[in-house]
Length: 371
Image: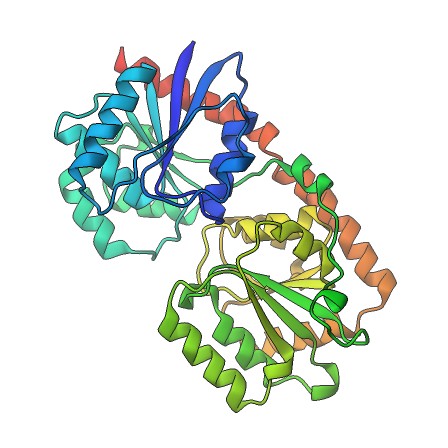
């Protein structure tokens, strides 16, 4: 049986992290022996990994931590691995350096979850010296095909496999009554935004859109996610205060039970400037949550064909404000119709069980090329 280890910097709550957990849990154990390796720290999602899947922690303290390389070598030798599946750019760089230095010999699949413009300068530097250590590149959206071609990856070593998730897990979560939980006015609808707070996620664009909505139709927004960029977060808080919108924005931080929070909202918002997915859009769909989103990312491109009215051209806050106001004015029957439509779209397009044969094909190609 072939042995595959999924490797990632952290298993804190996030899109790439969720993708790893769902893949590890749903890969056929009769076909592949699966393990997981966390190279740094953060284990919030580790508890959701199947109990029969080994989870290793390297606890490297910085990018080229020598102890991280030696621990990685030990794990790879113990497992007798056939393939390393690297989730994310910095994880790939760590594995590529380890291979260049002779600590590991296994082929590396680089699973790129990031947007086309994310951290380009860093990765071009890595690419110029580490390109030969890559066995296969998998991007999660069509934009990344252009990105991979620009980095001169051979076309035979490039695949685009769209984001997917284990949708069955959403069924076990019960909704939280957010009005009661946060002591909110029951007459106001609640929108939810999920994502760590940094400029790419567009919280400032959401605030700008709210400034263009009549006060009578302003919803309450619950923001779920950690602070990745503190200066950006403070700018957004100042903007909210200057517009006297403090009562309309509630920041609740990261939540392990994020799906229950999503199910407790009336609608979702995705004001992002840049996304490769976004995976949270799949979560909204699977939970039956109507939404308003900027049309960015591979998931959005798929869903936009089915629900064009839910998507706004990127960064157009005038149209975004209009869509939010229309959402607040929507009747319960219209929201229910959109809820049911979303669930169908999710299971038709983003069920990880339908994607696994494509992944198996990539795995087999890489392992065969090594022989």
